[in-house]
Amino acid sequence: MGELSPFEEQLAGYAEQSVGAPTPAPDEVNQAMIRHWVEAMGDELPIYTDADAAAASVHGQIVAPPVMLQAWVMRGITGGRASADGKPSIQNELYALLDDAGFSSVVATNCEQTYVRYLTLGDRLSMSTVIESVSGEKQTGLGIGHFVTTRADYSDQDGNLVGSMRFRILKFKPGTGRTAKKAPEAEATEATLPRPNRPRLSLNEDNRFWFDAAARNELLIQRCKGCGDLRHPPGPACPSCGSFEWDTVESSGKGTVYSFVITHHPQVPAFGYPLPVVLIELEEGTRLVSNLVGVEPDDVEIGMPVEVTFVEFDDELTLPQFRPVAPATATSGAT
Ligand code: ZN
Image (cartoon, rainbow, N blue to C red; front, top):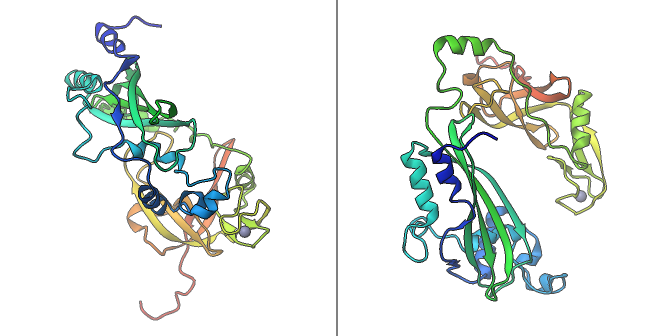
């Protein structure tokens, strides 16, 4: 470990500090907010909105979706800045300190929630926030900065902990990222360096088959053995009928561009830019996110017919990518 600079020591002094008085939730846990939430999220689990189904469940009553935890105490855009006791919070003081030292840009990097119990209608939460840690100075792709990790603890009306949320941001100096400070000569040198490997996949027992197939240059679609519905991305249960039984069909690899974005920033060194990120609709009906190759970014269009091509990025990673095909019905006399 290197020596801390005086500024880093000052920052480290904020670790383990409570941000201020607990913030009370403006409303108790209620059915209306739950209903809006699940509609927005497309979550149709009946224990959130159907009193009879909830009564028959292990919960015995309506419960709130656990991931709503933060929503119960969150304030609107205008009400979120002042701390409960009206004084500038330790958190704002820390951010101002970083701002004044030039670390004026911010990006959220991690969010992690822990649940102790399900919330039920009528629960009234309050939130206490602690600054867990402030990192030393780090060089990141975005710039030189400090990671600030806070933890919000949510308690119920009896003072019992019901869940926590750890949230990490990076406060960084704009213009100090890897791409920003290149001199023209440096740029030429970096452009000739081999590109680092793409990030490794997050594989689990539910999705491994799909990537194993991709390595064999096969594009698979999961098929429910209960109702026959095709689905993607891979998952353990059928969203239509709930069956855990499934097999696969091999896609023809033909489809169309359903939607796309051409990504320019932020740039991850493993990828080339501008990077067309496309949502492909396969002719079998399922959609998948992929990249487009063999086309100028300006020429990408919604509805463009495409076909799969397998790209071996490195020894461990082969992925389906898509390339344009000439329209099959180019027989009209329009041109
Ligand atoms: Zn099914």
